[in-house]
Image (tube, chains in turn cyan, blue):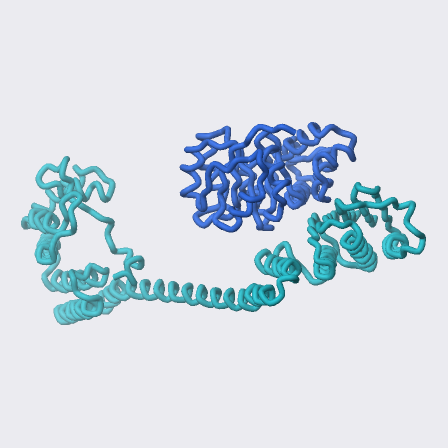
Length: 370
Length: 213
C-alpha cells in the first residue's frame, strides 16, 4: 500500500462521509453534496429523478449508504462495501435501462465499469495483483459480451471497434499513467542516490582526508582547515567561485588562497563586479599578491582584508590589515617589495598604488587601474 | 565603557558552534535561551522576549527568515542578527529582507560579535564586509525605475559601504571620512532600510529564490 499510496489514480475519490447532522434521511445526499461542494438539494433531486427509472434512485441510495462511513468513523467492513457496490451497480443498470439502452449495451458496460473501479485502487481487500487480474477479466468479458451481442446488426459492427477502443483507453489509460508516474519516481530516486554517492565521494576525498591530516599533524590544522573551507565553498557555491576561466576576480581569489597557504593567515576576499584578466589585470593581481604577502609577513595579525571593486571602466583593489603598520617614508630604499613589486608594477601599466600606513595604525594598500 | 546587559537568544543547529559563541561573548551579553530549529526557536523567543536573537541563516526546518517572519509581528522589539557561513547572496539577503538588522559571518571574533550584539540592540545595523559587497553589487548601475529614493544609494552611502567591504570598522570609517561614528551608523541604517524595502531587481530576485516575497 505504501508503495502506491501517493500514486493513486485520478479516479480515486476524495473522502466522502455521511452527514450526520443535516441529512434528511440518512445524510447520504448531504454528504455527497459536501464532498462535491454543491447544494444538497441538487443531489437529492438527482436521486429523486433516478427513483423514477425503475426505482434506481432508491437502490443507489441504499448502496451508497452502505459504502459511505458514518461521520468520523472508520470505513465500513468489506462485506458491506461489496454489498453496497453491487447495489450501486444494480442501480446503474436500472438507470441505463430506464434511459432506453438495450441490455446488449448495459451489461457489458456494467462489467467494464466494475473492472475500472477495481483498477482504480479500490480493491476491496484483494491484493493488487489479483485485483488487476480480476479487473482485466471483467473488462475482457465485458468487451466480448458486447461484441458478441452486437455483431448481428450492421450499425453495431461499425460501433464495436470504437467501443473496444474506448474501453481500452478507459482501462489502460489510468494504468499507463500510473506506470509513468512510478517510473518518474524511480528516476528521481535514482538521481538522488547518485547525487548522494557523488557527495559522499567528494566529502571523502576532501573533508575526511583533511581531518586525517589534521590528526596526524595538528600544527598544520589551521592552514589545512582554511584550504578545505575554500575548496568546499567553491564546490557548494559555484556562482561565487570560478565563474569563467581566468577572470580578474578568480585570479585575486587564487592569489589570496596562495598567501593563506604560504603564511597561514586568513585572507578575506570581498568582490563586486569582475573583469577579464588582461595584461594590466595580471600586473594588478601580482601587486596585490605582494601587498597580501607583506601584510602576512610584517603586520603581526593573522587576518587580511581584500576588496576588489571592478566596474564602470575602473578597477580598484584594496588590501588592508589591522596590524603594526609602519612609516612608509622611513622604509629603506632597498626594500624592493614596496618600491618595485607594488609601485613599479602598477606604474608600468599606467596604474596607481597608494600606501597608507603609520606605526600602530595598520596598513592600507590601494591599487587602481583606469 | 559601561553598557547595559543584553539578553540574547542563540538559534543555531550546531552544538559546537553554540558552545563557541557562549564562550566567546563578553560579560555584557547574557544568553537566556538556545534553540536548534525553527520550531523550537519561535516559542522560545516569544517566551523569553530577548533583546537580540543571533540567528543562523540555515536551520534544518526552514531558513532563519522563517523564524523572523513568525516572531516579528508579535514581538516587534526583538532585534535579529543573522549569522552564517554561507556565501550565497540569496541566503543573506533573504534574512535581511525578512527583517534582520544585520549579518555577520561565523568566523567573527567573540569581541566583535559582542560589539555587533550591542549595536543591533541599540537599533543600528551591522554589515559584514561581504554583505557590503552584496549591497554594492545589487545597487550597481542605474535601473530605469530608479526614480525612487529607495532604489539608489547616495554617494556617501556608497563610500561608507566600500570602506566596510575593505574591512574598516565604523570608528575607522568615521575617522577616514571626517564624520562622527553616529553619522556612519545612520548611513548604514539608511542602507539597511533600502536593502529591506527597495524593489531593485537583484534584491527581489535574491529574496524570491528563498520564496520570501
